[in-house]
Image 1 (cartoon, rainbow, N blue to C red):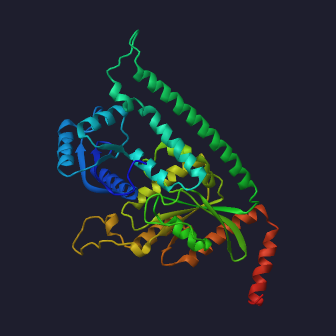
Image 2 (cartoon, one colour; image 1 turned 180 degrees about the vertical axis):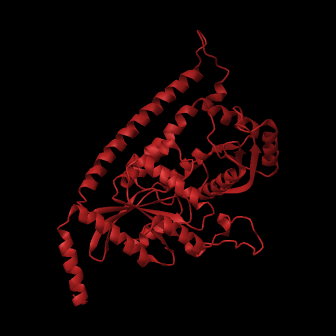
Image 3 (cartoon, one colour; image 1 turned 90 degrees about the vertical axis):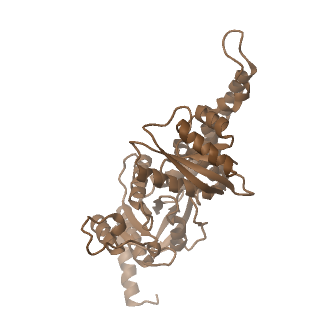
Length: 408
């Protein structure tokens, strides 16, 4: 564990404003980083930004900003500084020398959260693999106390020997963990084949949009749900029946911006549920100020997972009970922005774009859940009948019977 579970650590966050990342985007990322820190158990005391063309290769931020951060850390009993982008081993080493506190980057923080959230042996193996892959290129800074040892003929010191030993140990562990995951993948592949020909529906979306809450409503189950990032790591599959149609519903791990590549690779078998799904239910937090960006992140991730294969998608805008907006003044002639659009405005826009594949709900309050069930039923039935067209007669007979005698 990186962050103590016994007591919350005081942390400051650091982000950059660059030509590739404007101030608005940088602040959005820092807000998300603060939520990640809160999920990990840290208390964010202050955030720092610096406007630069590119990160400082030595210390990520410039000398003046680093001195400003150091002074604040010393004066406010800060135990940890978290940077919004990945740091090199050299940057981490230099920052630790200058600030004399724990230094984390975004990936290390996410890995800490994943390590806490992993419950099953499968998830724990996936997280352990990602941790070792993250650690491997950063071994050098762990041996800085031996940096007086120099390489070259006759100068091969114990520090370098120890680093090479550790590297071999970690490479062996990575190889072993990958083999364990391949074995688990084979088992899960067999399990998926043994589920028969039932239609597969997968809940996908950004982290903390309410997928697990919706899963509980649709499947009448008790999947763990919490207002934290990455509350769910293990894919949960439930058999759901709407009217006369059974199908499999899976709740998958949430996506996030700047998700570490190692985590995507480690969680490949978990994401197979998305790849092999017949229908995707994309859950969106309509109350989040940048939900459009979150939609784009999820769509890009799904494209990468599915290799460009087109899958039918139902777009579910959740948390309408938490939605708010700022109406424009009557004399304001400037173009309306996202913050000025009402829920009805957004509904008209997205319904026009998605046709019948869009619904606005509140999973927590149960608002419009019946409407969502009908859309899922229609789409799942359509997929089912393409495989078993002879069942159409049975469905029609069932519906006619129900209409004639509701008690049957």
